[in-house]
Image 1 (cartoon, rainbow over the protein chains, first blue to last red):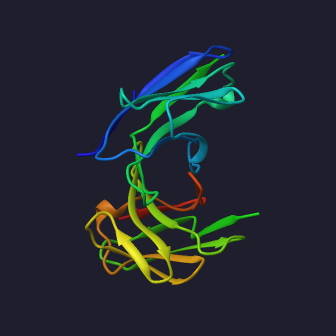
Image 2: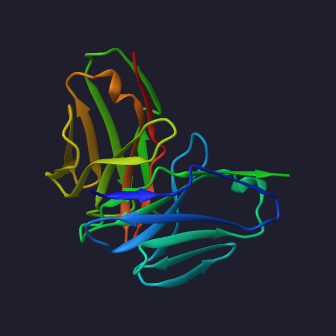
Amino acid sequence: GQSLEQPSEVTAVEGAIVQINCTYQTSGFYGLSWYQQHDGGAPTFLSYNGLDGLEETGRFSSFLSRSDSYGYLLLQELQMKDSASYFCAVRDDSSYKLIFGSGTRLLVRP
Amino acid sequence: SQTIHQWPATLVQPVGSPLSLECTVEGTSNPNLYWYRQAAGRGLQLLFYSVGIGQISSEVPQNLSASRPQDRQFILSSKKLLLSDSGFYLCAWRANYEQYFGPGTRLTVT
């Protein structure tokens, strides 16, 4: 079956760094994406990794290791507005469908 | 720029009633379109996706159906709602590796 595992909740302090891990088990693999969703809102795209390594976009970075079926999202210089749910998603075939994890709820405290 | 619309924003329907949710996309042609459902505190479940007019792929067998009567219009329907159909329904379109989500419809079946 297809499964993505990520922690359900993470708490961190404003200004700190937090890493949200995602491990996946899918029949195929074409890439790993990360989405952010604030309470009551729609998900918004953060990053995509198709190949191994680190992708950096401002305060956010995402890493992928295909041999380990593992990736993570790194958030630096945390701000209160980063409090949200973060979802990893795998594209498992050439059709551009996504399989989403259950999400990690990040709480940033002052 | 591209914009995705969904309506209504919220909906309360009795069990056994019909459903019609509409999604339209502006600023792009022949988009890949997706319908997702999100239960409270959970990840996104892909329901349907479409690569063109009249082309619908169903991901989960249930009492929902989808149609794409026009290039930029995607409709989610049900003839008889179940309590388990309650959730946050999101329409999305794809650009390269990114999916862009509409504002969503929060459906409560009573």
